[in-house]
Amino acid sequence: MILIIGAKSDIAKKCAHEYAKNGYNLTLASRDILELQDFASDIKIRHNINVILKEFDITKFETHQEFFESLEKKPFGTIVVSGYMNEQSICESNFKESLKTINTNFTGAVSILNIVAKHLETKKEGFIAAVSSVAGDRGRASNYIYGSSKAGLSAYLSGLRNRLYKSNIQVLTVKPGFVNTKMTAHLDLPKKLTASPKKVASDIYKAVEKNKNILYTKWIWKYIMFIIKSIPESIFKRLNL
Image (cartoon, rainbow, N blue to C red):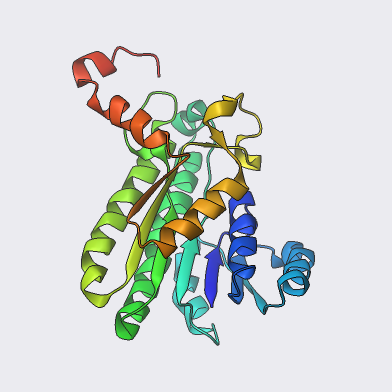
């Protein structure tokens, strides 16, 4: 059983197809799961697998333990795709938006993954994958509130990977660059650097199969971010990024 959290997102839906076509049963967790009923029916028939829909709000931390305990079949693999991004200027002037960004991208993921990790430790098998972002590799004026929430998630996953290694559990940090999704529809993204949700999902599946620790997708972002991280702070702070 694969648990996908944030299942209404474009990347999550493609992940569902990727795992379904490889024979995995799915639990799709999201708010307003009625919106997923047609999708779940289609994927169930198309791939001849079992699909369970579960209501889940990543920002309602107090419900997470009950949610996990309610799962009849506990997941072998858990993929967290939940994410939220608003304009930097809005987050700067409205702390509710900053808090929503942090709670969706970081705090909520920590809450549910603490519970998942505790369960997997008892099984000594399985995997966790969570979608962070290249934006978390270095803070930039244009999106540092979103970026800092993803930086926190990346650091958390690094520590979780260190903790769970001895229990034979893989922890994959997924760092997409630009992705053509509903969340980025208002942005003018460079085509050569922008991945499709299908490409990201395929890369996630392959990275899990190869037991990788960190995935940059598209692959070129690994080298772009290496260059960006290498710029001295005295120079970087002057750049209009």
